[in-house]
Length: 53
Image (cartoon, rainbow, N blue to C red; front, side, top):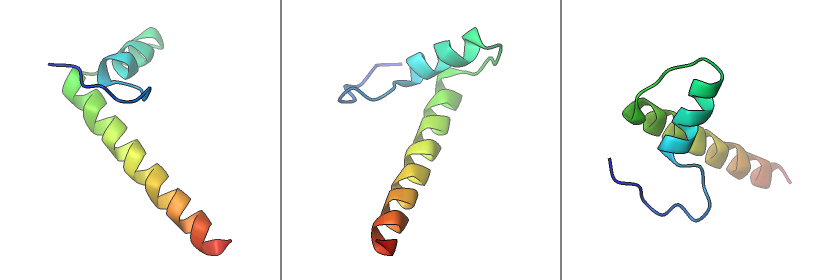
């Protein structure tokens, strides 16, 4: 899988290495889905916080 430039963001391969270091084995594709989900959730949280302020 080709690595994309992520402006300093965590890449799927970096996330996979971190998880593997702590005993969780995932594929590159699974790591990519996990990161996409986390980024989506963060976006929703930030938008909600901005609306509340």
